Structure formats: C-alpha cells, structure tokens
Length: 188
Length: 187
Image (tube, rainbow over all chains, first blue to last red; front, side, top):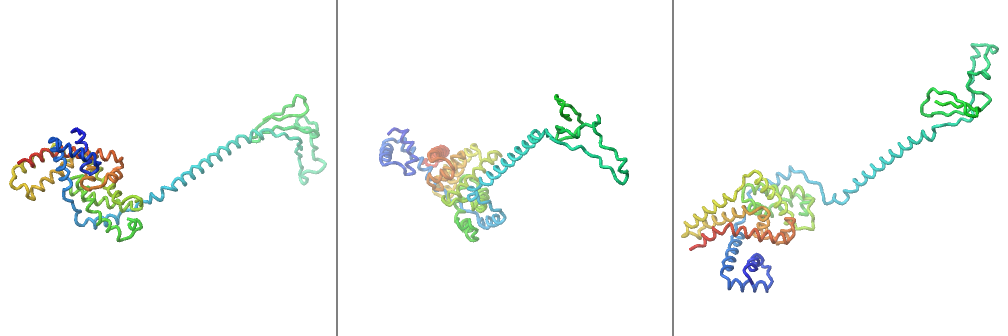
C-alpha cells in the first residue's frame, strides 16, 4: 500500500469502517512506514482530544426559561396535516374564477349579438293611431274625420306598411319608398 | 414527543430536561461561546415547542432537534461573519502561540488539570475556526457521536458529502493543532 492511499484510510480506520483487507493493508503499511505511523498518531491524538472535550452542561434554569418563553409563543399551524388537502381550496378558487370569467365573456358576447339579431323588425301590419276625441269637450258632429289619402299622412291605412326599427335607440327617421314603390320604409 | 404534540403539560419540560445537555453542548462546540450557546439552546427548545405539531413521527426526534440546533448555529455563525465580530484565524494563531509557550513552560506539571484545560480550550478554539460547513459535520460526528446517516439527515446533504466534509474537517483541525501538539509532545 502506498502512503497516499494509506493516509486516505485514516478516517475510515478511526470510524472502524474498514474492511478486513483494508485494515490488514493499512496496519502492514503503518508498521513499515514511520512517516505514516507518525501521521496517524497525530491524527488519532487530535480526534482523541476532540472526543474527550468535556461536555458543556446546560445553564441552570434553562428549563424554566424555555417554559416561560414557550408559554408566550404561538403554536405554528400543523403543516403536516395541512400539506395534503391544501391544493383543494386553491383549485376550487381557480375553477370558480374561470367559471365567472367564462360567464362574463358569454354574457357580453350575447349582449353584443342580441342587437344584431333583433336589429330589424319587420312589422307586417300596423294600425294607424286613431285620434280619440274627447266626447265631452267636442260634439260628435264636429269631430274631424281621420285623414284619408292625406299626403302628410305617412301611411295608407288600407295597406300593410313595413317598418325597419332600431330597437336600441329611437331617432329621427325618414320615409323611403322601396324600389317597387309599394311599401314605405322608415329608416332612422 | 408525541405527548408534547398533543399538549401534554408534563411532557415538554421532561423533553427539555432530557435534551438540554446535548443541545447546549452541540451549540457551544460549534460556536465556542458559552453564553450565546445558552440563548441558542433556549431558542431551539422554543422552536421545538412552537413547531411541535409539524414533527414527522417517522423520523428520530434527536435528528429533528439537532437539525433545528444546527440551523440556528449556522445562522449565528453567518450573522457573526457579517458583523465581522468573530474569532479570526489570526487571533487563533496568537492564542495557540500563547498556549504553546505556556505548555512549554510548564513541562513539570504537564498532567495537571490546568494544562488539560488549556489544551481543551485550544482545541475548542481550533474547532471554532474550521469553516462552518465542515465544523458542523465534525462536531456532530466527533463530539456528539452521531452516525453518518443521521448527520446526512441533519445537514440535508448526501452521505458521501458528509464523509468528505468530516475528513476535510479532521485534516484542517490536525493542521491547526499541529504546532501545539508538536510542542506539547516534545520531551
């Protein structure tokens, strides 16, 4: 055994962790190599000294001081028990958040689509508003007749009129006849 | 420890009494500072109490308490290094020189208690100058006598790393104590 290898085994020898073959090899080397023998003796002395250092006893009253402090201390939560199900509320919260976001998105999409789908309302028939005279205030004979064929009247009461209405906002519009001239169309 | 975890009033003082010596010794030897060791030992037990419900029942209690003690000692060493208020290598060399002179001058009374105490004091100081990561492994192994596997758990490092750190720490300690031993061993 060479010196370098022997010196590397000093620690394991001290800890009694050498195989029989290693121990025999080391002992044989130490018996023949004075330098390594001296080195090992020094190594052993240092570890002997270290191991024989007197034990330092705890200060008197340590127990009482620890108890006094521990009474004031707050117990930490049980992390061992909580470690398992901790993901559940997190996952539930995340799922809830995703659900809320999805609902908001769907709702806003519907709102955006709703006007488009109901943007035009085709009114097939319309009843001309009638003026109901106040019978007390005006005699029956003097009641004006509902205007027929009046150019100011937009609608022919005998024909169906088609309206295209904006369901969201009512604005001023104008009447336009369709190319066939059959039905007036009000655009706003 | 199971009784402490379920708030048995008598269990915790008993636990402190049982482990106070080992914890104080470990922290004292790592820091080489008796007063600070008492404070740290106190802190170790308070932490054991505070975190008593987090103790994993599969592991050894000594491993758990030594882990807490080692971490606190490590923090204290780093705090001291930051404050640059710690025993320097130069100071150790001065101390060792003094000890060598004292030992050389007192050859007739080499076996006296005083001499032994001086030697032990020098060894304690030498240990305190070994770098922190080697020192903890050294103290746990060569002073507290923990098996390598338990030291690996306490320090949270692989067993091979523990062995290599202990070997290096022993080599450093031998190197630091060499002049003292040579003089003390001289006829």
